[in-house]
Length: 206
Image (cartoon, rainbow, N blue to C red):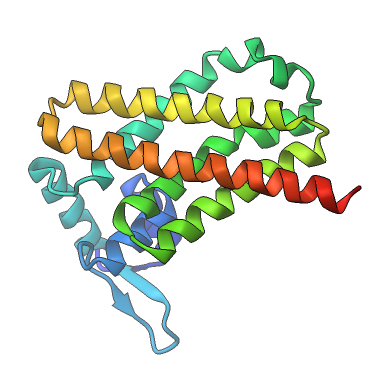
């Protein structure tokens, strides 16, 4: 059964990454993929396994492979209970807290898209995430200051994880600097979108 066909989700599970990462690798031509007549992506297990083995030894997937390490580091930092000390987090009920704990995922996957895209696509991604943070804050009755604090908590966790992972991997300083710049540019755009959206929502409800 080594040549069984896998769906995108199945391939993601085999590779241990998010489905959006598999889609990204496929669209870039990095990962072997087959398209059905209906346009769905399908993967052969044998090809996926071989690709995974070779990529682990060559480490050619950059920056995606590094970012997988980053997201694992982010999850560890958040699971350490740092959220409990945040004043804005203490104002939320359990449902709201669960939603905010998921925030790092949208931020991370948005960054994944940003570092491989440019122009309008990147701007759309940052706007969408900023809108998400603003509308969530309004839904849970957080002020715009608390909304910004919530975003900055996850932004700072992401940035510190990027620095740690790139430092541990001894990535050349020029390449690491490029990534740091991209992270800050992207997250600055999100913060601006968040504040603009929050203001717009406030004006609508007056």
